[in-house]
Image 1: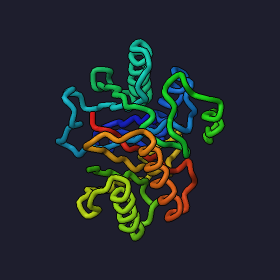
Image 2 (image 1 turned 45 degrees about the horizontal axis):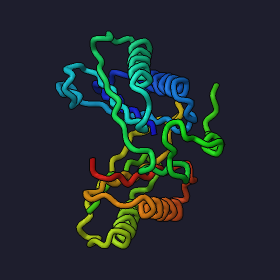
Image 3 (image 1 turned 90 degrees about the vertical axis):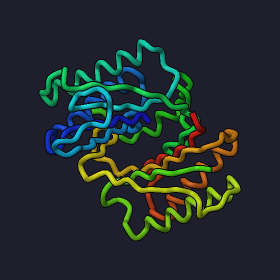
Length: 136
Length: 107
């Protein structure tokens, strides 16, 4: 956790672009929250021509994020704004073509890196020792 | 009761191992929750190569996502997740960083 799902039209986002979006999401999430980079997951899900994202936004692109619960609303709003902005900038789509949300789950109900996730603000130094993905 | 979605990256967990992993997840769950193993729903979702990333790099991480229909206490949950982690690592040979396990209470 976090887990960011990007729902996109089939063949609309090339591999290198997907990778650039995933890296940008990692940079943004870690910049806003201080989380280790290796804990940031990003998945792209394509839907076929004539289909839709499965969300009610009416946009052809959608970003559905899942984060640990407990951060202030302004942090969550800023995070979502920056993530959608990065997606638009990297892919070149119109801002009107993407919407998104961030839902939250209780950290203590997930185990990652072999230990139970701490609540936001309760991370000890051992958590950061598990960061196996180095920043550029 | 609990139902599972297991998310795996294409090419990371061999197809012929997935049934055994599912059986082991059901066996552990039945033991911890005192339910019938045969009644536990479990499905695999595979992420295509190049569509899953971790830390901005192509991911090899799998996920076991369990959704409970009744809440359990935290001590039981942590032991439950550890059993699932240890089993998955023993069967697949993955590192501790290559599996996420969640056992979530109903919302």
